[in-house]
Image 1 (tube, rainbow, N blue to C red):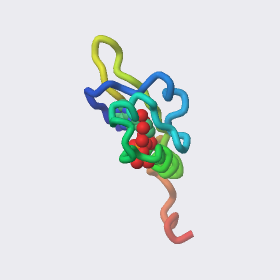
Image 2 (spheres, rainbow, N blue to C red; image 1 turned 120 degrees about the vertical axis):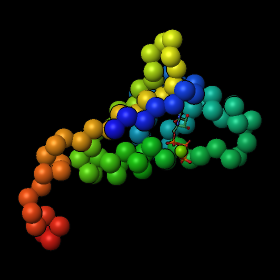
Image 3 (cartoon, rainbow, N blue to C red; image 1 turned 90 degrees about the vertical axis):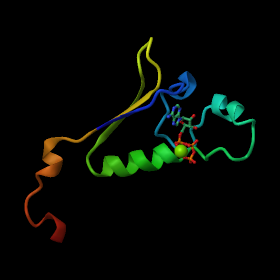
Image 4 (cartoon, helix red, strand yellow; image 1 turned 135 degrees about the vertical axis):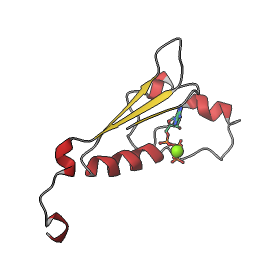
Length: 90
Ligand SMILES: Nc1ncnc2c1ncn2[C@@H]1O[C@H](COP(=O)(O)OP(=O)(O)OP(=O)(O)O)[C@@H](O)[C@H]1O
Ligand SMILES: [Mg+2]
């Protein structure tokens, strides 16, 4: 599953840490006027943690120039959907 947008993309300073708790870019704080309405930097951490518990891998990228925007790729292996019958009861 791929989710993308045509916004500014992920800030380079956070590319390696997206998915860890409390990661926010200073750029977004500036764009937000330094107000207190910015998030905690927990959204991706929570989403990634839950997705990984379902067997998924989650990758965060930026679209390649001249395109721009954030790209999030979520992949499950086929085996994650082929658990034996009775799984839910165990
Ligand atoms: N679509 C996007 N395009 C560019 N940067 C993004 C995008 N979505 C998130 N980010 C960056 O990733 C950071 C982490 O996002 P995340 O959702 O984990 O936290 P948050 O939105 O700042 O706070 P919270 O989700 O806890 O309210 C954001 O602060 C922002 O810098
Ligand atoms: Mg968020």
